[in-house]
Amino acid sequence: MQVLDLSDQEKQTIIDKRTGQCICPQCPTYKECQAPAKEAVFCTIGKSGCITKEVKCICSTCPFAAEFGLKNMFYCTRGSEKQQLLLETMQVRSEWVR
Image 1: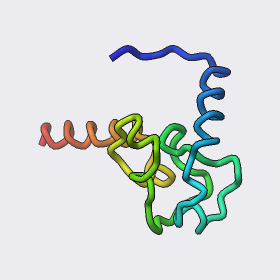
Image 2: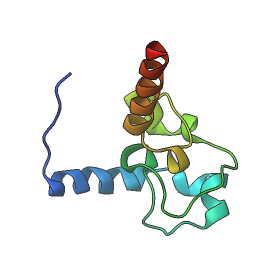
Image 3: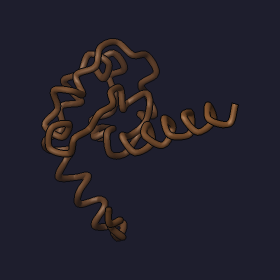
């Protein structure tokens, strides 16, 4: 898999585009916190600075989940897809060492 080396402006353009399509503001967990309007696309950017309590997750119904093959949930509290996959990999490796 090729890693893209994007500029900060290119990354922001992608985030802006995804924010317009994002369903995070419809999520019960998001609403519980009344997160700022600019906080969204957690599957891409990672955890919320505001949300701490997991209520119910609708990540699996997000168009991004299907489009990009996302497997995890609660990105707003557990981190982006990439962050969660990295943590899962680290946990598996630590079990091998035991």
